[in-house]
Structure formats: C-alpha cells, structure tokens
Length: 240
Image (cartoon, rainbow, N blue to C red; front, side, top):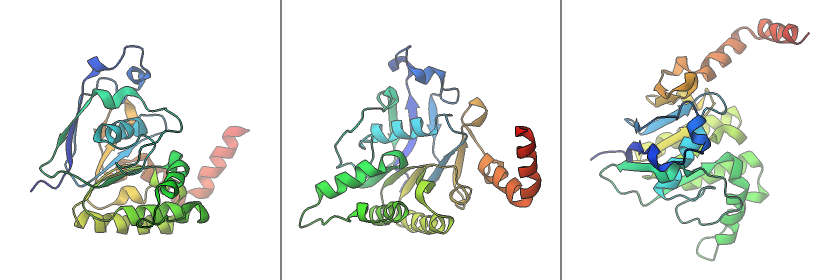
C-alpha cells in the first residue's frame, strides 16, 4: 500500500488574485506541481523564501486549522493565512488519514491555550502553559505524533535545544515506522539530517531537491564550527 497520505500538490494560479503577494514569492511564482517521494520531506531555505507559506497552504488544504492543532481544532485569533490553499489540489495516497497534526512555532501559544479549553474529563489537559516553552513544545509533539497520520511541522526546532532536537528525530522515526508522513519546514542542521529524507530547497528563487550537505543550514554550521574564530573576525571587521 502507498505509504504517503499526500503524493502531490497541484497549484492553479488562475485561482490566485493578480494582486496577491504570492506572485512575488520567487520560489513559488509559477510553481504548479510538487511531488513527494518519501515519508519525510523537508522544506529548507532562507527566511522569506516561501517555506512556511507553502507548508501553511498544504495544511489548510488538508483540513487543518490555519493556526495549528489537529483537524478537530477550529479557532482563529488572527486571520493571516494566504489564499494559496484555495488554489491547491492535493493528490492523496491510497490511505485516508484520520489523524494528524499541524504545528506552527509562531502560534503555538494559541494552540496550547485551546488545548486547555478543549479538555474535559475524558481528555484531560496537558497543562502546557505550566511547562517551559521547550518542554511544552516537545510534550505536545510526543503526545500527538502517536502513529500513522500526516504531521506538518513549521520550524519545530524553534523552542528545542540540540538534545531535544535529537529526541524529536527519534520520535519522528518511531512515527514513520508506524506509518506516518512528515512535511517539515526547518533551518535545523540536526533535523535536516534525518536519514533518507527528501529535502526541497527554496533558495535561488526556485523549488528544487538538494542533498543534506548542499543545504545552507549544514554549510553555514559546518563553516562556523570548523572556523569559528576566523569567521567571527571577518564579521567584526565588516562592521568596522
């Protein structure tokens, strides 16, 4: 059986207003088809290149709340998502996903609040606001990535230490073995190192596949670790 819940994303640009800022996002402009080939796909690239915009569009088109949560979450604190989702057609795999989760670093506080509001006797709250930011992030992901389903994560490393990022990699592996699919936007050279993951780069004004060592996250981190004093000296000199 096909292991993927989403195999392709098709975009009809005729359904996006000419006035939309989406036409100015270089890596997305004119993009009509994205194909996923592995259970784990990363969106990599510099800030502002369209990673989160594309990830958000896929999440909303799949039925997730724009601010995050499971498909059962329905709330809005600020309507900021683009119209990209409405121009998307998702080509789904043979399995129908009844479970999944959309995690957004920027709106996690709102989701944690709603998790508490939705709690009842049969579904007690995790009381995430009583944990540190990193602890609540990881606790939410560990409890929600419970097996087969589609998990869309937008910069999950934002609140996680390097050690906790390694824990997340292990949780992802367990979920994949149980039949999960992941779509993840990330700058983390740790998360991007997931074995066998498909990495799509948004750099250079176009969406294209790259190897792990070709990502800027890996290259900049390697450069800093191997030449820290030299690199910092050059940065300081450039400011003088």
